[in-house]
Length: 378
Image (cartoon, rainbow, N blue to C red; front, side, top):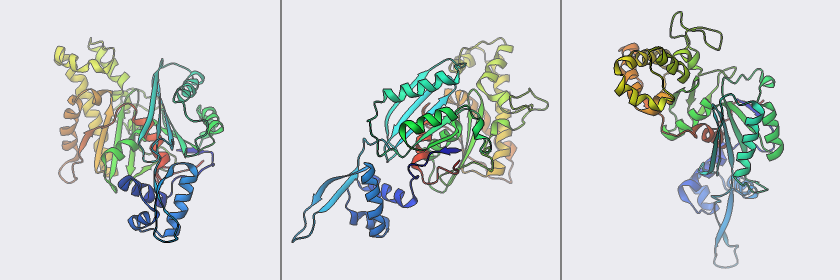
C-alpha cells in the first residue's frame, strides 16, 4: 500500500474507542464517554476537541446543571459529515463511495466503461463521479481517500505506477492523504469487517478479470515486505500450464479468471457473453460444462490447500464472477480442499462474499477510517 499526503493523521486507537462509544451509545456526555471507554478525561477531551473541530462530532444539546456550573454538553456523530472517500478503478467500471465516521455509506456512484479505456479518461471519470456526489465546498471532517487499482502494488517502485498523477490530483483538490492498494485487498478488508470478529484472520480469494488474494489479520491488512502478500492468483497450480501475464506458467489466474474460464468454454463449443449465463449453461450443457468447472475447482482447491496451510486463517472468503453467480463452484471446491488438507490439519470454513460490487470502494474508504488499516506510508 502506498500513501501520499500528510495533512491529517489516521485515526488513533484512542480515537476509535471514542467513536465506538458513539456507535453504541448515540448521544453522550464527555463523562459518559470516559466511563464507557476507560480513557482519562483529558484524553477524551483532546479527542473530542479534534473531532468537533473537524466537524465529525457535533454538540447537539446541553444538560442544565444545578447551581452555577456550566451546562454539560451532549455530543453526537454528525451522520452527514464525509469522513472518507473510496475509489475503485475496477475492470470495466469506476466506483466511488463516501462514508461517515461510523463507516456508514453516505453516497455511492458507478460508471461502466470499455475495458480498454485509457488511464486519462478513467481518471476523468473519477472526478466526474466525485463532482456528481455534490460534496460540500469544505469538508473539514474528511480524513483521507482510498484508491483501489488492479494488479499487484509494489511498495518498492511506486514512482512508476500509472495512478501517480491521479493521486497527486486528488491530494491537491482535497488536501488529504490518498492511500493506494490493490482493489482485492480493499475488498478483502471490507469483507473481513462484514464477517469477522476482532482477532480473526481471513483469507480472501477474488476471481474476476484476474485472480487476486489478500490476508486480513486481526483487523489489519497483511501486506508482506514488498506489498505482494496474498497474491494467490500467481501460485502455480498446473504443470506446465499456460503462460501467465506475470511471466510464469500454470498460475491460478490462467485457469480461474473470468477470461480463462470463458475461453475454456469456447473450446467446448459453449459461447457465453458473461458469467451470469453459467447457471443456464449448466442446465443446458451439463456434460460439456462440467470438465471446465471441475478443472477450475481443482485449481482453486490446490491453491487453497497451500495458502490455508501457510496462513492458517479462520475463514476463506471467495468472491468473483463464478462465485457470485451461485454455489456450483463453491460446492465443487469444498470437498477437494477437505481431501487436500487431510486429517492432520484443521479444515477451514469456505464462504461466499457477503458484499456487492462496491466492496472494493467501501474497503478503500474503511482503510482510511481504521487505525490499523494503513500499514505503510510512502
